Image (tube, rainbow, N blue to C red; front, side):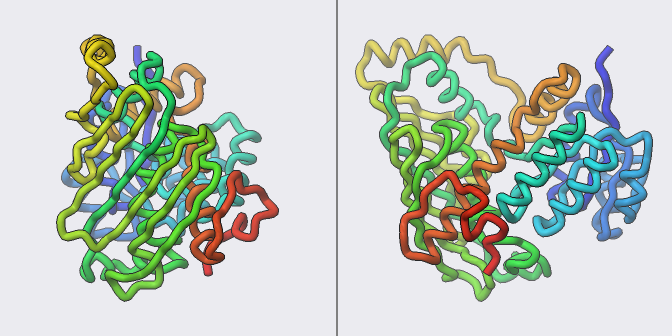
Amino acid sequence: MTRRYNVAVIGAGIAERHLTGFNWNKERFDVRVLCSLDADRGQVLVDAFGLPEFCEDFDQVIARDDIDIVDICTPPGTHFELCEKALRAGKHVICEKPLFGSLKQVDDIAAILDETDRVLMPIFQYRYGAGLQKLKRLIEAGLTGTPFMTTIETHWWRGPAYYEVPWRGKWATELGGGLLGHAIHAHDMLNYVHGPSAEIFAYGATLVNPIEVEDTMALAVRMANGSLATLSMTLGSHKEISRLRFCFADLTAESITEPYTMARDPWVFTARDEAHQNRIEEVLAAFEPTEDGYTRQFELFHAALVEGAEPPVTVADARRSIELVTAAYHSQRTGLPAKLPVDPTHPLYCSWLP
């Protein structure tokens, strides 16, 4: 019989997407309570998903014996404190992106995890789109060849109304701008395919809205595997697109451009010649699609808990994305290339807040 884990969801913003993912995994998870300081918004979700309980007291939730997993969907500035409290209370934790606001906090949580038998899974649900998974399959099959160049565009629109939410657009509560909160999935997919970055040069600006944090940024990246990448992010594009393009010696992979779903099919894989294209098509013909997004990440999380294995996305994975952000902010402010890895001696290791 499948082990069913009891879940408390914390926060009422992006929680709707998490609840949908749990809803598709009802045999694996039972959401017992939604906890939020926004009672009106929280009650709407409780009613919509038929949840048994709503509360506003986080400490009360983590003290409960009937809660196995705490799923944190609150603004970024609250993540570290809530994760630490939940882990020390003996709960497994799921946490939305961005995980934390510094590499020190990531490393501090990793140390807490080493002291316990608990698991923390950061959210990077875009990994599980069929298009990106097909590329991973082709890499594993040895059909891509040497990586050359990756280009990733996150060009979305966020007008003044978006920043009417009090915590957005501020260093203290959002922890960063579009580089951290919007393009971080792009960073993760870059690292997911190619591994860690080695050096970054970044330009950043606030051009679209009168906010504290950046809303436009351009990065040139040298990967540790020797390939190059360019990442561009703006929240000033009236035509919203997300695009990923990976150039290898033996094939080029191109995503769809639909924002928020760019990892999904149909991707285009163009081989160096007809014979190699046929080999690619043979591998892709055997690909079996699964659910994607939160649904798939939660499904894999359940399997990891049951088997005592690492979660599908680890704190180390999230550290890689936070490290890229740290280096990019450092480059932007110094006007110089920033090298990775970033260690505790780095000036932004403890915080990149101005």
